[in-house]
Amino acid sequence: MSSLHSAFRENITFVHPVYFIISGLEGIPNVRYYYVFLLLAYGVSVLGNVTVMALIVLDHNLRTPKYVAVFNLAFVDLMCSSALVPKAIDIFLFNHPYISYSDCLTFLFVCYTCLSMQSFNLVALSYDRLVAVTFPLHYKARVTHRFMLSLILSFWVFVMMGNVIAVGLINRLSFCGSVVINSYFCDHGQIYRLACNDNTPSSVIGALFSVVNFWLPLVFILLTYLCIFCTLVKVATPQQGLRAFKTCVGHLSLVAIYFIPLLITFTLKEKMPPDARIINLSLTSVLPPMLNPIIYVLQTREIKVSVKKLLKMSQKSKIIIIKSTM
Image (tube, rainbow, N blue to C red; front, side, top):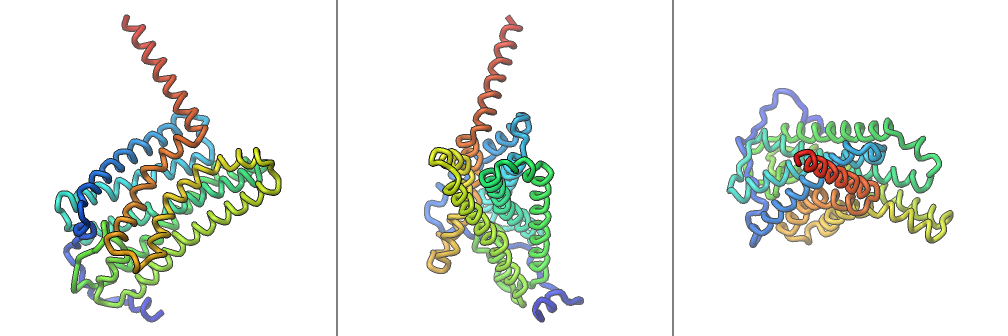
């Protein structure tokens, strides 16, 4: 408590560096091949997420509460990949490792906001599946547009307020030694550990955020699928259970892609080499934005129907244009 109090005392001069140096990927062998992968992943991410967002906007059949959450997930994925990948390419491929102090804190805020929202968006989608499978007759009454919009908005407010606090505490630190960040972006943990004054408040916030933004959402999602499994075992025939479970496969795939790399990192901790840890964490921020739209387009019946409908409409419009010019 005294450390938190001291972090907010008035009339203290804090020493802030002009810039930080991001050095996380420099020592990795053949890292240029990883840059090629990052560029491909970013291109697929932009194309896929923009396509999913456009489909939801253009097709009235997709304007359901579930697809409000899917639209938000695509938007967050697009923001996340756009914040991380171009900057990583600029830093490491074009040898611009220097980033100003204020830009680094802004970078930190945007990245952690997007990464946290990915986690909470999966919570919203898991709740949607829970109600759809366990309370199908009450689904339309419980999961409304207003409810889903309110839920997602509350997640945005919560995440942004939390990251404002985290950035504010970083701003109360003094940096009088190294300014080298051993990560692929302005990593909160790597930054506060460079401070030469008391970093306990930032350490506490970091630990609290890992629980609130990672472990609690994961536990909630696992509990929802435990409830779904129990419901299907009790009331459904094998055929009905398989049909209902297929509606959850897409969401389970998203959960696995997002949480498994983080679970590996948190489980192994010090046993994992620093370079492997950096690559593993970077995959957490690169793979979900790239694969999420592919999974939804391939495994969600409504979106596949929407894609086919829009393709037919485009073909018809081309035929009409050709006939009119003849």
